[in-house]
Image 1 (cartoon, rainbow, N blue to C red):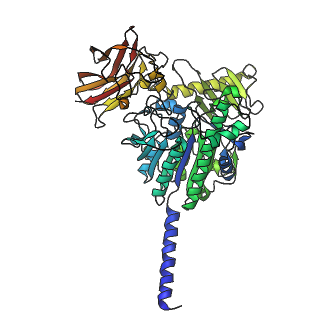
Image 2: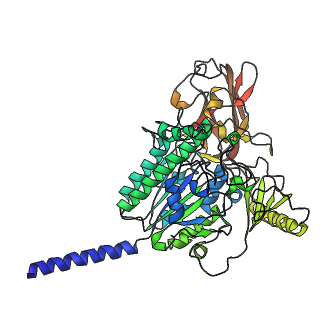
Amino acid sequence: MNKNAIYLFILVLFTVTIATSAKKKQKPNVIIVLTDDQGYGEIAAHGNPHILTPHMDQLYYDGIRLDNFHVNSVCSPSRAALLTGRYASRTGVWHTLGSRNIMWQEEKTMADFFKSNGYVTMMSGKWHLGDNYPYRPEDKGFENVFRIGGGSLGQIGDYWGNGLWDARYWDGTEWMPTDGYCTDVQFDAVFDFVKANKDKPFFTYLATTAPHSPIGADDKNVSPYIKMGLKENVAKFYGMVTNIDENLGKLRDLLSELDIADNTILIFASDNGSACDKQGEPYNAGMRGHKGSCYDGGHRVPCFIYWPDGKLTGGLTIQEVTAHIDLLPTLIAACNIDNTFDVTFDGINLLPLLSNSDNKWPTRTIVTETKVNSRSKLYKSSAVIADEWRLVQGTELFNIKIDAAQETDLAAENNSKTTELQDAYKNWYESVSTRFNEKQHIPIGTNAEKVLLTAMDVFPIKEGASAKTVWNQKGVAKAQMNHGVWAIDVMTEGDYCFDLYRWAPELDLAFNKTLPKSKDVVFTEAGINIQDKNTNQAISGKEKYISFNVNLKKGQCLLDANLTTEKGKLTSAYYVIIQKR
């Protein structure tokens, strides 16, 4: 070997050594895949005899599985708790509509933590924690977004007409048209992000809209279940899960191709129990209850964690109680991220448990809730979880070790345990309830320019009444009626324009226009009431919106923007655009 060749060899060796060293020093990437309405039983590895989930099964065997993992039994509360490491009720989220799906402005999310520590951040799919500034993902630490509006495809906050195929997604600036099936499109956005940021530490939150309704998938995913003789709705639901599974496999393949799989923490979980057709008797792993239930079938979900560089592999099963609130404290420990925001977490760092430490894991008591319309009644829609014990709605007591189906109420014969868990709930409630009477106010008059309000976010006019809204586009088309108020925060004094719409602004339709399957309702009057300014205007039917110009003082207030039919029925305007003049 001549001298030049030796020099070249040394240079190459030095370069490879430096590159390898740099790679080792890079903090781990993090990808969370959160599915929507997929229950614990909708994975073949959990015993389902019909469903086809080879890639979820492989992750089950490759990683660490949290087999006693609990969330809230409906979506918005679960997402708030997962992203903040705090009980959803503490963050202001205890419902899926009526603005009670919006986190307090000051709450910090996973993305805030990762972004502040040099990570590139991205979310794809479903948010459902607020569609207006400062509650959107782009305001909560996510530098890159590719999402729907509202809580599912076709809800009132989503782009009008969005469905399972060829929908539009918000990229932080505009609604982008897409070509293809929803889950494919949502994963593709993540694939593009990962490829572009493979040399940087990144955090990705991929919250699929599937298998939440509307249900359906390509025939290649649905037909195998039809051939099995399953009901059509079950077949479609299972087909959506199988499509997610295929994309999960593509994601793992991509990470391997880019040589970043070992240094990526991959977490797979669901937001609540199954929403599959209950009449079809789908597999539920012997548990009682589905989505929205206080029983384990409503809130015990799959959770798999895989991280080779962190030695989180090998198919270890964790039987101890864990929860969505634990993921953020665990991740910041795994990624060596300081709690610079000084957040008090309700969850705990699971790393000692995941590493199969011999240290005895402490007994814990956690609380989970379904959606709660009124916060005045203790125990309503709650489950207190303490090891094998479950206190359901404050009165029923079950021991999961001997009664996984929660069929035998043991409260009468276990007075002391019942009282102990009731007391634990009361302490929890006292801790999280300090802001229950406050409202999530939507700012107007900021640099965020136009503000679009939808009828989904109105509060009941009567304090303490059950939340009720027009929440999806079908309700708008059918002219469903609900009269409520929006909580507004006027940031700067001045003149504001309020435009009240019958139809989604992007449709550019007149009041009296009807759509297929819509109800022909004649609205004759529009009105607003804000800061003691109460004014009305007649509707001819030809207008696309009715405008009101109002001078407002700075401060928080309530907005009543309403429409009246020719029969005298009153409803909140379905859409309102507010802009400072």
